[in-house]
Amino acid sequence: MKKKIVVLLVLVLTVLSGCSFGADSHGSQKKESVKKIEQKNQAVKGAKSESLKSPHTVDTKGWISVKKPAHIPILMYHSISKGNSLRVPKEEFRAEMKWLKDNGYYTLSPEEAYAVLTQDKKPRQKTVLITFDDGYSDNYTEAYPILKKYGMKATIFMIGRSIDKKNHLTREQMKEMNRNGISIESHTISHLELNTLTPEQQRHEMSESKALCDKMFGQNTIMLSYPVGRYNDETLRLAKETGYKMAVTTEPGGASRDQGMFALHRIRISPGMSVKGFGAIVDRANG
Image (cartoon, rainbow, N blue to C red; front, side, top):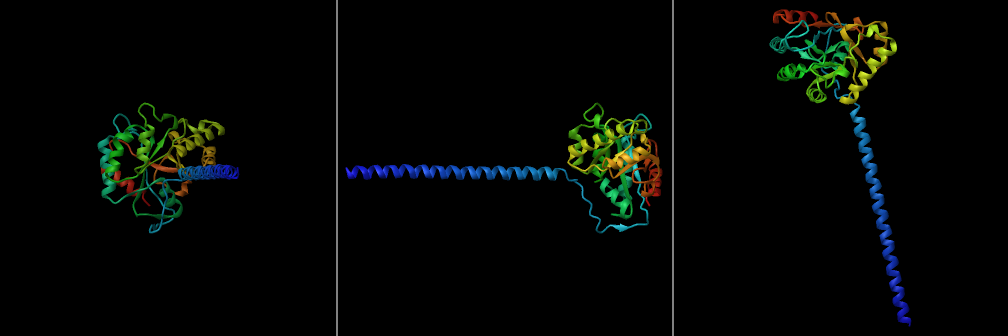
């Protein structure tokens, strides 16, 4: 009888021990699972935080000081094709880019251009900002290969509602270019003449476009191009309020902060211009 009782006690203790081990094991697994989830959440948060940072940072160490205020030529292109005064043929564009390369010009990103204009320092004596308005598909098929060949940066001002539309850039094309030295900045959401709109409508055009570019490229979009170059006093105020750091017009000449950082001038590059004429205009605007 005593033996039976002892055997029963042993069996009971064994079962209880097993249950205790199972509970501890399950609790340990649960803690480990929770820990993994927390680590994953932290990783996601980190990725989101990183994605909101501008992919371009400017280190001005080693830059040279220049006469105040600094001047830079901001070149304005539209389509790289043939047909009208806004279209520069591919052969001419290639020759112009080759001239810039052969003559020692450093091509700026928007962030670098901002640093030059506000700090009166340059990475090289000769600097230029190359821009394209509207975001035509030939910016990818014709201009991009030439820019890549010469190792040049450029900026495309994209109309938000034209993305993936006929004769305009696709998201994938822009993302590829953005990974390879081409900045995508704002040309508003609908390409309406801002000086004809109410302040509320202007704000919408600017803020929606900035939000789109910020999200699409994981950047802080700092530059705006006014459609058709039209703006008024409200435009200048709202461009700053909506988070941009500078904006360009179609007013001719080299750019400097004396014009106002939200009313920078540009040099329109037209078809039929000789390489010599192109070079003279660029050199004259490079202060």
